[in-house]
Image (cartoon, rainbow, N blue to C red; front, top):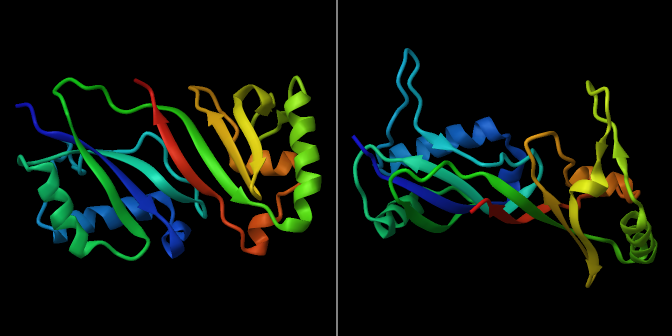
Length: 209
C-alpha cells in the first residue's frame, strides 16, 4: 500500500529553541494527535510514527526554514493539514508550507544550511577583519572530541559575510562530519556571543534535488 507522504517546512523560535530534537519530536507527535491527524507507524515491537528530518536543529539554535517529512495513515488535503494543526500549535512553532511528495520520492537529504547571527556594534570592525582572514585561509582545522583527525572548516564553508551588522554563513552538508555555526563563531573569536544572549538562527535549509 502506497501511503501519502508530505514535506512540511516550519519554524522553531523563541523558548522552543531550548528543547532538544527528541523533545521536539515528542511535542510534534502529541500535536498531530491533538489535531486528529493519523500518522503511519513503523513496524516491529516498538512502532513509531514515520517522521523524518534531514537535519536535526542543535539545541539553542532557532530555525525559520526547518524541514520534516511525514507518512500519513490516511489521505488528507495539504491545506486541511495546516488548518487542523494551527489551533494546536504552541508558541514558538509555526508552519510555512506543506508539499505532497510523489510516490517513490527519496527521503530529503540536506545540501547546505544558512545561519545568521547579529554582531554587537562594538565587535563588527574586528569581526569583518577576521572574516577576511578566514576566507583567505586555505584551511581551518577544527578538532572534535573523539576524532583523531580535524575537520576542515574552510572546505565546508560556502559563504561568509558580515552585512548590516549580521553575520551570515552558509555551510555545506556532507556524509562525513562537517562543522557547524558554532565552529565558525569560535574560529572568528565570537564563541561567547550566545552566553551574552545572542541567538543563532538557521534561516535556510537547502535540500538535494
